[in-house]
Length: 108
Image 1 (cartoon, rainbow, N blue to C red):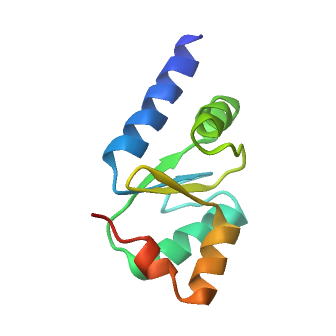
Image 2 (cartoon, rainbow, N blue to C red):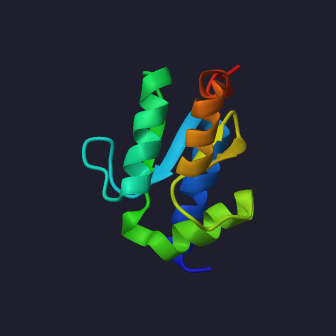
């Protein structure tokens, strides 16, 4: 494993384990760099003030591989709540339409 792969794997593992809600996204909260990441950010922001984001663009292939180990998905964005994979922007949209997103984003 390269040092970059180790760095990314550590970031992913630590973020999923220690952050109540974490969004792995392309870009930052201030400047999302893709429409799906922007949509996920907006949906989470409607229901939570505090959550973490991780910009995956500095090592996208490594982040895809590390996240796939946790979720079975390589697509970005990905949301985790209390260490559990929730989904991407499409799943967040579905949960929001069903009225379940707020409760899904509640941490213990």
